[in-house]
Structure formats: structure tokens, C-alpha cells
Length: 261
Image (cartoon, rainbow, N blue to C red; front, top):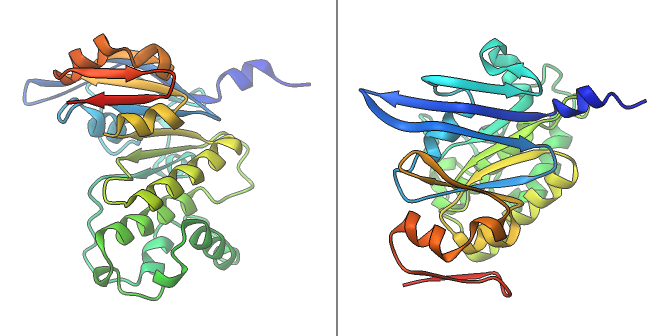
């Protein structure tokens, strides 16, 4: 028999989340939910709070107020080890102090005590991301887009564990920013496959059209506040977007195309 109460808890719930620094409000009363098996795209102009939101949910930044629940447990009560098992984060700025091989960068994401399965996991993830040819190269010698794909693989391999019963989540902060069109589409296809395996995904983007065509829900931020939250068709209304981005925006819902001038 399915435990419905248990199933209802399988999400990340954010309630009235706020963040201040030096008496400046960065996020104000943000509430939404990341369910397993769905992609939520976070959109908004620069400085709207997208990166801050992801850093707080990932546990890398401490909120000022509000509540974050991971599968029914308050984030504040989860150990760092437990957080690492439940969520994997790809930030915008990934600083590498030493000149590791790309394979070693990916291995940084491997958190299992048993290393016997690492080679299989590495093979699967590197093939999936199309970076087999980069594994033995020094990280500093490859292009910015290639480095981003290596970090993406590192993010994926962290949750490569078939023995975890709880739902798990990927948090991405603009993972497509340095990618060409082909690799951008490849990354999106990988995320869609993760959703089929019941992962929940929160991803910050700048590309409205990309979000329109692959996200299940849109979280639209303006000046640290939730301007609109819902399905792409609910959120992508010309009045909403023009207000948030402060430019004229035209939405073609039939073809799922957004034009701005």
C-alpha cells in the first residue's frame, strides 16, 4: 500500500523565504515547491535574486527568515552529508585552485564511500555529457564551454546512487551560459531524462524561449520578489514579462516564441 502522507512530503517546499545583507533586502517572502519529476525555471533580470535563491536552497547561503523543507525535513536540521545525498548544485562560478584533470574534477562530485562503482558511473556520465575526450585533459587547457560541461557532469555524478529511496534534486545556476546551441540542447535533453527518473530540477536561466519550451513551471523574479509563478502559459503573458524586464515583449503562444526588442 502506498503511503500517501509520505509521498506528499517528497518535494522541496520553500515558505516565505527572505534574505538580507547589510540591511538590503535581496529576497522577500518567496514561496513555491519543487516536486520530483518536474523542471522549474527561475527567470528574471540581473540582480533579481536568482543566484541567491539557488544558493540558499542548496544550503550554501543562510537565509534570513523563512523555511525550506527537503522531503518533509527542515533544511536546518539536515547534516551536510545528508544534504549532499539529496541535492546537487551547479553554481555560476566554479573556482578550481589546482590544475586537475577533467576526470578528477568530476570525481570531486563522487560522495559514495564505496568507490567500486565509480568507473562505471564515470563512463556513463561522461558518455551522457559527451566529454569522454576531455577526461585526460588538464582542466585549465579546455575552453570555457568545455569546462562548464565537465562541471555539469560533476553535478550529475553526485546523485549517482541507486540505493537512495528519497527523492533527489538538481539545482542549476545558468548552466547553459557558455554553451553553443548544440551542447545547450544536449544538456536540456539530459535534464528531461532526469525528470523521467523522478528527479526534481530547479534551473536559473536568461533564455526565455528555452524556458518556454522545456520547463514545467516558471518562477519569475523582479527585485527579489515573486512576480509570477505557474505554468509557462500562465506566466508568459506580455504584460507580465514587459513589466519585469522593462522592455516591450511579444509572446506567440501558438509557436512558443518570445520576441523582445
